[in-house]
Length: 163
Image 1: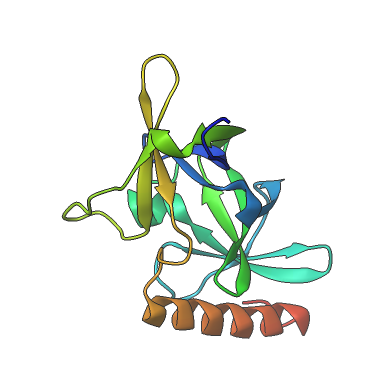
Image 2: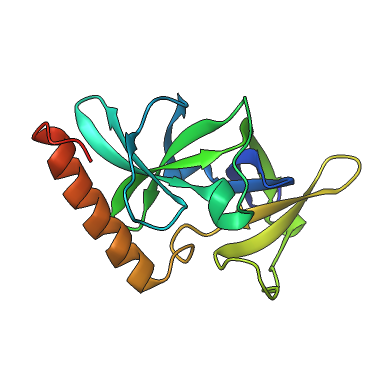
């Protein structure tokens, strides 16, 4: 019997390969105009309309490295706790299958954001793929702030008031 495996959506961001469980990803969108942010943290990118629904968008590139420059950037629509959000990443690579035995726990590093649940080895060269845990990516206070900001912004966008 083959070892248990997991499907991960692999993407590039901040000079590294990252992944989230494919089951958490709903859709991949091209970068498009966002309702602009006002005074939120820099990594809150704004609101995007998708099929009549307003989604908050977080720029993971800025959250992890402070930099957001990529012509191949995409928005990954994913479930973040109880909320659907857009996550801006530098480039989406593929959905790949990883054996559980190729994944080891990730030790937190000083100065790096929380939310990394493990590191998988992939390919002949054993390249690291850092696995994000969307349940712990943001502290509870940040999640409340995100939900509040996105709800207010979505209401303003829906009523035609803009940001």
